[in-house]
Amino acid sequence: MSPRIATTVVAALLLVGCTTTGVDRTIDAAATLAKNEFGALSAWNATETAQRDAKADADQRLAKPLTADDAVAIALRYSPAYQALLSDAAAASAQAAQSGRITNPVFTFERLARREEGGIDLDIGRMIAVPLLDLLFLPSRLEVAKARQDRAALQAASASLETATNARLAWVRAVAAQQSVLYFEQVKQAAESGAELARRMQSVGNFSKLQRAREQAFYADASAQLARAKQAALATREALVRTLGLNTEQAMQLKLPDRLPDLPTAAKSEQDTQRALSDRLDVRLATRDLEALAKARGLNTVTSYVDGLHIAGVRNSESGKPPQKGYELEIPLPLFDFGDAKRAAVKAEYLAALNRTAQVAVDAQSQVRESYGSYRTAYDLAAHYRDEVVPLRKAIADEMLLKYNGMLIGVFELLADAREQIGSVILAIDAQRDFWLADAALKSTLLGKPAAGAAMEASARSAASSGGGH
Image 1 (cartoon, one colour):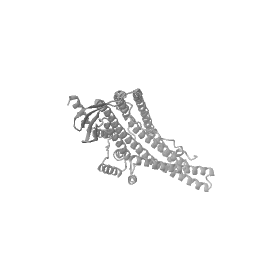
Image 2: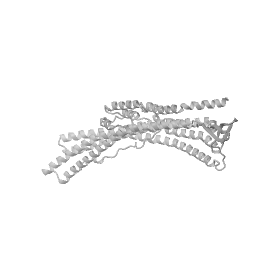
Image 3: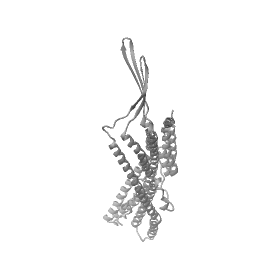
Image 4: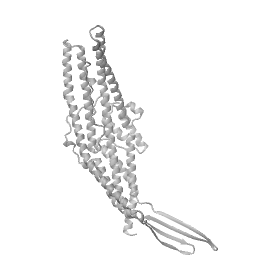
């Protein structure tokens, strides 16, 4: 056997283990990103034992109030949706490995019998054919297969990032909505007290019908707001349940903290958020696509002229005659299809991938700037409410209470101020929620997966801060 043939055979045999190795590397890519960026364990639950362990870990975390890190950990180890994404990535990796394998040789056996006066005359033909082009272009096929496996690994890492980000966003929304319900209940209590007092004062002739109607209208609005807040809390809680993949029993066990975490002492600077553009997942994915297409381009150009070439060893036997040995070469003739359309398509696809890669780089830089702007604005607003608005409202409330105790103002003025103070606290909760949403979105954007729908969500709550006509 010649050295060239021996090298080809050894390379083909090495491909036998390519599928399993590729799948493991794909799953490891997701696990590495989860550990390095989120400090969480990412696991592919391909066995019943792994599934039981993941459920046990989720149940243990649900036994106490769920933190954001616990939500991420459950999503990356237990969520069925994430397991489906990992399975898809593993399948893509295996298919990429398969694309680099040589087509199996074809064995043909032919037996022809002819009855004659002296007996039966047998003609037996044996032929084994191999795809010659597969052997000749094996190195190129291996390079293309490796590029596709690299892409599958990046897809798995991207799934890990997206799942962790969605879990954190869902957790922030659920906790903020639950925290807001508490303050809306206080708004309703204050409105209810004002409405009852107005009713009593009207009954003794100290309040007009219009004044009582205003207090009653505010109470009605506060009741409606509380109902909407409770529904928002339920909706965000169920969104978190779906993101984590919890069953009905686990959903009933889910407990959330009473409030969001405090703001950090200082916001991240723009320099702290600078990362190499080549480290982003979307840029790396686009680059791998371009590399795979470039490697496949030369192979496709050659096969556009000759898309099939088979060589076969032949041995024919005939009764009473010596066996015939030889070879057979099969090559399609380009009489009707000259391959020009295929070559034009390959060139156009490469140019499209080249421009897509350039656009991804442009988008990545713009998205980082936009995401950091949202993050910084959200931090400044949340800090403004924490350091300025809420303390001022508290100081005003203290002064109003002193005036009330000195009989300088009435109870309705005191209630109106309490409503405005509670309204400011609700807006502060919204600002705090928007900051943590922007923080999670910024991290995801820096890694190459911009989070959709994580923009500032605070809305003015005019009814909560209105004075009921005072």
